Structures are given as structure tokens and as C-alpha cells.
Length: 219
Image (cartoon, rainbow, N blue to C red; front, side, top):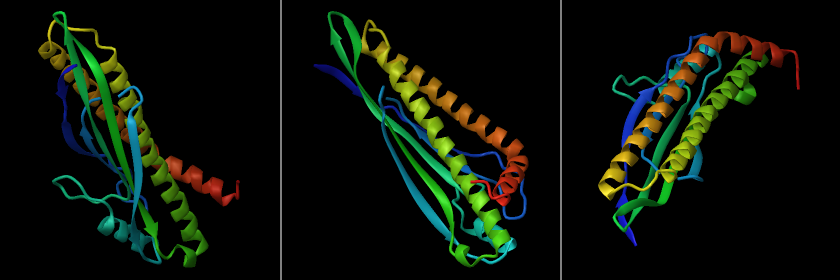
């Protein structure tokens, strides 16, 4: 029979590094992280949410994104897109013959991607529509990558917990679970930050390249 059930929680909020601003683009991206250990095939749920913006010029859109975008952190900055990430789960232990072993491991991951939706897109001038389509596609790609980074670490967490060898008692094993969970969550946070920093450095070059590609009518 299971000796104990443990639920571990680690919660934090981090805003992403700001991307260079260009007309129509404030700082990209926020990342909310709440973390907790547990799965080898984690239970993963991904959902999407949209916020509407309006306007007929790039200045209008820039102002709308800054006014209506998702908000987090004490500073209260708003962002063109966001990914909310919540790790959760539980782990059971089995104790017998003076040893305690990991029983069931259940890691859960919920990601919610928040994206902008421009209500006036169909009536937009072709040039502005091209810029918006390019930008909004890049925001979505960026947020999807944040969700994928979280999925990778959820799998790593479950595998690492399942691989734990038996300990002399469950208190020792529970401490080991906490240590591994904190290490993998810290690695997750570092990987997310590293991704944001690379994206920020490459933002202008990437947008120019994408705009040229779309302008040329590439499929």
C-alpha cells in the first residue's frame, strides 16, 4: 500500500526580456510560471485565449497592444502575447522491509497561450495587413515555443522522479524528490529566459526577413 502522498508546489512569475520595439511592436511576451513536480508521460493540457484590439494605423495597434495586452508582475507592464505555465502533480511512496520507493508519479502541465486578434484586419490597407500578419504569426510561434519548452521539462521531471532508487525511509526520499523538482524547475526557468534573450536579440532581423519573404509572395 502507498506509504504517503506528496504534492510539491513552486510558484513564480517572470516577465520575458523585452524585444526591441519597432512601429507596431512593444515588448514581446510574458511568461507566468507556477511549478510542481511529477509524470514520464505527463498529463498535458494546452488552451488558447484571445484579446481583441482595434485600429487602422500602426500607431493605433501599438497603443491597443500596450493597453489591452496581458498583464503580470508588480510593474504592471502589458505584452502583445503571453504563455501561462502551471506544473502540478503528486507522487506516492511505498515502504516495505526497511526501504521506501517511489510508487506512482503524476506530473501535470497546463499551458494557456494568450494572443492578440485584430478586429479590423479585413479592412486594413495591404501594407499594414502584411506587417500585422507577419507580427502576429511570430508572436504565436514564440508563445508555442514557450509551451514546448515547458513540455520538455515536464517529461524530464517525471522521468527523473521515476528513476529515483529506494531510500532508507520515506522522509529521505521525499527530500530527494524536492531537490530534483527544484533543479528541473530552475533549469526550465533558465531555458525560458535564454530563449527570450535570443529572440530579443534577433527580433528586428527576423521580422525584416519574414516581411521580405511574405512580400515576395513565397508560399
